[in-house]
Length: 377
Image (cartoon, rainbow, N blue to C red; front, side, top):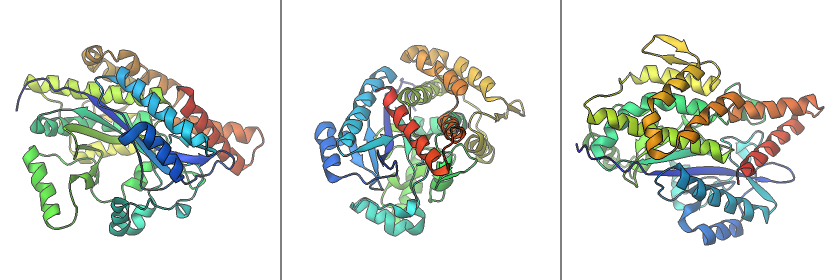
């Protein structure tokens, strides 16, 4: 395994929901909207599984400063063309009140296969995520870093939570998205792998059986990308605010480099059993940043603010290398202002206090999400 520094480039993928500006319910993307976006953005935009969704992906970026400009361009393009159809994008992982039973899937070979293979489970996939790719050329190094980075996935998830509502109900969770996604096969925390060859052999066993076509059907929270020489984090809810997307991407990039720095000194982050890390994953889903995560070294539940300060200290050198310290320190603002899940609940509570009924208050949450999407453009 080479000690040569990986590129640590980043790429960000986001999925958005399209809503009608009048009813604030989900709406299908007209073909003209997709065509207009693709004419402007080419292969950086595509349909998603459901016709009310649209997906974008940045170019390969050296750091979050580059990613900011590309992501702003992508988000602005989608918003501009959606507005011509009286639609607006929202970047939340679940719509506050629209029903999954009323949605249709995109008529595309890949999605038709998913519909057939996964049946009733996939029809509930009215969820949106955010993926961060970090460039790591050496395949075995990718696996080594995946094994270690898994520990930090609950920390990143906690900051990202944007899906408290489902089908018009407050679920009590900060991230309901994962409870839906985890019904699919080959999801959840990645298993510990010994090498890239071992990963490939495991995937090939399923391919040879005709169970999956390729590694793109491995949907772990963190995986070696099937298309690029990257480690792909898939744990996050999508972010209403562009700047919060950049904070999560910067944390992911810096953590990956920090773990590489340990590795080339023949050191490593302690690898805990997935059973234990999964408990923190659940705590992040349920509480976001508010009830703390387990520090397995200390053997106690630690306030998230304390964990965040330790994390920032841990990756200072890497944040300086990528010139992303301001974006990483913005995690403190997410903690102070509340995650999107908390802000959505605040919007709902304020609407109820103002005399709106339940349905009107849920519409107010969607208006809040539209405003946040446009705030950083």
